Image 1: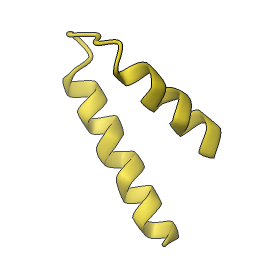
Image 2 (image 1 turned 90 degrees about the vertical axis):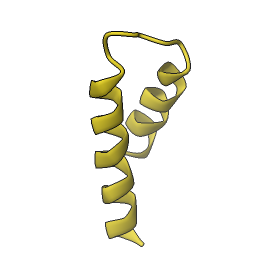
Image 3 (image 1 turned 60 degrees about the vertical axis):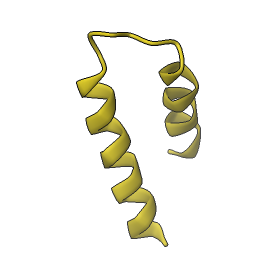
Length: 38
């Protein structure tokens, strides 16, 4: 389960990097969630 969380986080970070130029507000809660589970 822990490995699944790590993979999910790395996938989200990769997607965030791809979408970084668009800077859509929907990613802000995702970033907040990633910070919360660290």
